[in-house]
Length: 119
Image (cartoon, rainbow, N blue to C red; front, top):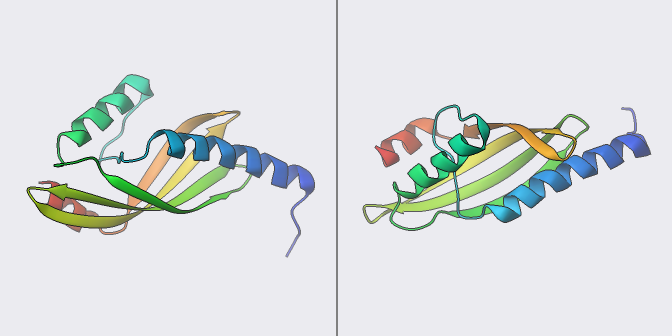
């Protein structure tokens, strides 16, 4: 297996730092199904999501792993809705261009259970 070059490791570290800054800025927030483009739509998503839960979501990031092209965040969310608690795991894949997050793909571990909880 090839060893990564110092340049490759440096690029991965810089992309990881971008995603970690975003994670630090958005604790207690979580996405819902759909495609959201641009700052206004993403902010609208966070506002809409807040209305679904009794209290702010709790998020725990397990690990953030980076390569030259992508950053992956493994996280667990917990929320309360109608007095009922629910916890779900997520994998978020980030595409980072320079120092900005260009795209996020979200995978929820059990999407059917999540959908049933927020219906």
